[in-house]
Length: 433
Ligand code: GLA
Image 1 (cartoon, rainbow, N blue to C red):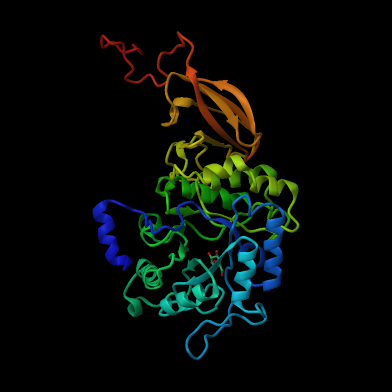
Image 2 (cartoon, rainbow, N blue to C red; image 1 turned 180 degrees about the vertical axis):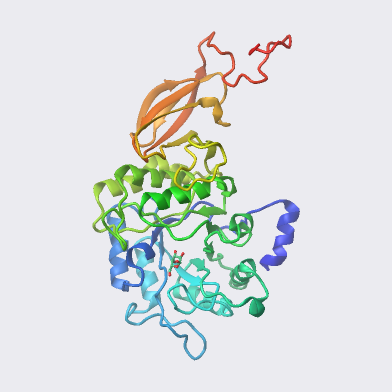
């Protein structure tokens, strides 16, 4: 049982559930942003086909998540969830088989309360039965929401306890059937600090409420993520919510992201190692949208098989460090990767801005070295740098840089230490004196 296992995990100091699934962030599509409840199996398969046609599945976007509203409003006499025969006239198995044929893994949605957020049956008290149904239908991934939860005196447990119920069902089923556990994506909107405990139960957890396709919503999520960026690791991910890339002048309500905002959105989500689930229409997607979603340089960092940690802020930049500001989150971020040291610089201002940082502000940089600089948006090598990098970014624009060691600094560069505090000659004289 997950609850028993918990004690053991504590004992060994392991904080992520490594049950063999979901080591890296999930990439794919989620139906909610684009369709809400208005879809049929045919429409979804057309969407899946459009993803194949654009090379998105090949690029790694291979989880297809069926979100809310797929069932009838009431269970059958045996308490089983019934797929809506109008939306799925050939049944759910036919639907997941069609997805599998196109190269996808199928994912489904349920809820830890009585009803889903759309008012369809939720899995509270039916965890084992519903999991059986989902697995039988061919789903291998479960997003688990938090609407219509029972009264305290009914459950006498908290959000945590209701998610443990499903995590236990997943574990028990995997054991019983000797099959791979269903991947578990918790969605309790960051209510009760899921970044502390959800990694014991599943592979990702939403960190906040529902995303919207405009900048203030994105900057607010980035702000929230900046304080918990270090909680993401292999098998356990902060989920920043579905992507809004492509929802400019589209979607309900229609989005208004500029090209630069869409790039910043994708960069932050990917480098923070969030799951990346597309939520716009791929059949009518613009060339820019596809180019953003298929940025190989950035995707490969999201999917780094050797480095599980995400980038994290080293300096907030505009506000004092560690200041909560949904409109102006941290601007200077870094992390390590198999491919080099990663920097993300984000202009959170509404006007173009010159931005500068010292390389050794990044923990992953070696002091006293020269670095080659690769631009992960222009896909160009931009020469070498040591000590400082300065760049000018458009409003809400981003730079994503990959730095690699290119030898020692030229001799005699002053000051002798980029960070001079406590820097000293061998005889004990401070350099700064
Ligand atoms: C909640 C979730 C969304 C979506 C809807 C479906 O709002 O946070 O991501 O799943 O429910 O009703």
